[in-house]
Image 1 (cartoon, helix red, strand yellow):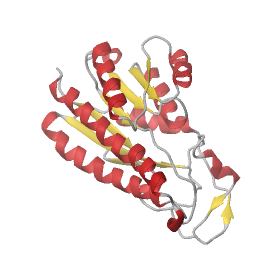
Image 2: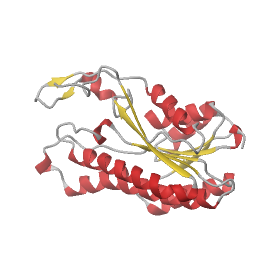
Image 3: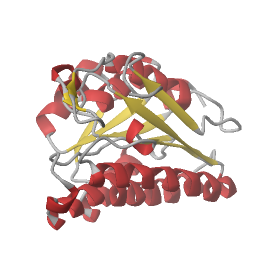
Image 4: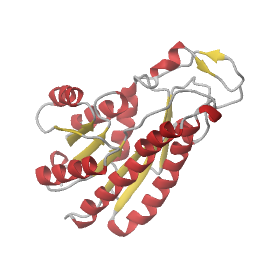
Length: 249
């Protein structure tokens, strides 16, 4: 299969890491389906890519909206070779005991349930297509390894993504579906860029942290996506070199 025929869905593709990954994939010849809540932002990314990009407004907390995304992709391109499960949200940094149940559910619905539903739809397409198989890459986080203060919803869902990745990787073997996870630390995006202004540390202090260009993450996703299906990057951690993750502090 030629590079021009490879089809990818990127969720959360309007900004940040999703946008960077979509641009990297398109630059390598992938046809990219851009998924996100805000059509205008998706259209901007599609215009930047040019021919071959498809922008589909999607609410990943709505199962019908997810189903429509995959149906549109299949109708337009006839197959799916890559799903980058990237869309995610955080929650306000409040004490654990004060987090509203509704906020907890919103984070779980977006960061975990949506990934499961997208994975289901990808499986159904990838197992039946010819050539069979494909790849799924889940956006984990440094929070899949260690929490920040007052981040129980985000941390719990990102730890759960690791379990989702492992189970998907195992169950995908029968269909030649590979699944890996990219754990990202301090990309300079609308979500991660706030680190530059100072964020709470485990010792109670407030400190600015180093960040990195999200284009580096996009290139890392492309590296994972470019492997033949007989090989898989199961877990990759990409982070700002000087962020306070490795070591004691």
